[in-house]
Image (tube, rainbow, N blue to C red; front, side):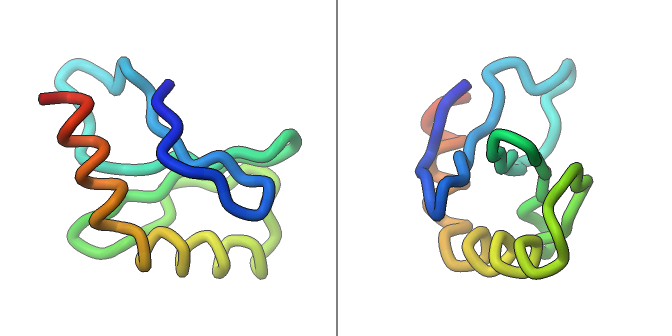
Length: 80
């Protein structure tokens, strides 16, 4: 499970086995009692949320939007 970065106690990561065929570029975000997944394209969109409140989801979306290129580059490097 490659961890791309950590912010405010959240781990931003993806899994090495992302399905067969592999799912499109996305990011998982986890805290001890919550996790979420967001698609990166065509727009950043929440795939699921388990435990984050609305304020956290907005904050996480903003982080993913700001760091989308970094996430995509890490994804492409890992799966190349």
